[in-house]
Length: 324
Ligand code: AKB
Image 1 (cartoon, rainbow, N blue to C red):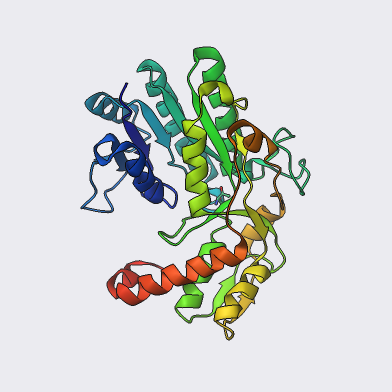
Image 2 (image 1 turned 90 degrees about the vertical axis):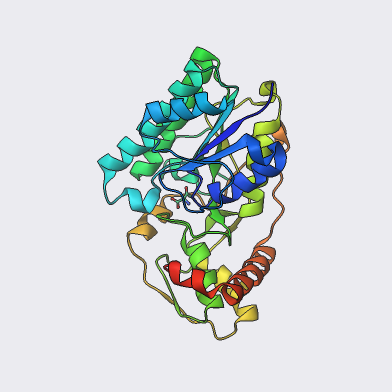
């Protein structure tokens, strides 16, 4: 049967790049991008979907005969703390809507992104294993733990093929992240390229697991492409790229911008980061679907700077629309 893919939350940091990769894999006409508003008027197939509205998801699924959903819409860790109950409502309701539409319409597959935010102080900070105590401190983390368990439930109870990855912080040049604790690792490159000072909201030695956007996209395509029987983890897979701290990024940036100025003013996001792992054991992902990250911090820094230099020097108008 033909694959018809729906990406919900396609305007975000991961979604905007994933849609392009999926279109290269499945063909432009077979991937529907969707979000609560249309960001790019020249988008190939775009549908406005507020994922809290189950009927709207159902209508789009029927209209295009959708076979797979990538459900990326969520309120992230830092933003989520501003309004915990609303964050819970949005993150859980959208997931239930997707799972129910997928079940009722017998969809082939669903992708649900989880996060390192599922971990709390009950898990070892170094080489955190896949299967450990999960005691998150943010409502985002709690919603991801619950979400993982609901995905497992839908697989066991209804046979729905839901697959999931616990993403580390994602570093990419294509769009700004919004509302996360790991966002500094993108913002810092924008500031360096714009010759601005950077004020970091984490302490300089706060090491967190991170992943370059190309690795994140490849991991997503890989987990979704292997046979159903290869997936032994039906909650979510740990995924590791590299681990670094703000001072290590600054060190890389100063190789190209020796005068780059950084100050550290830790805020509530430091408390969140302090409960997250420093490094991740992704043995299960490596064994089950052959996961292997490719990018080092040095390579990431070089690519980020090259791409952002190009971006800012060629499109000054877009610069005004970015709140960096
Ligand atoms: C966040 O910082 O909230 C996200 C995440 C690690 O899931 N980037």
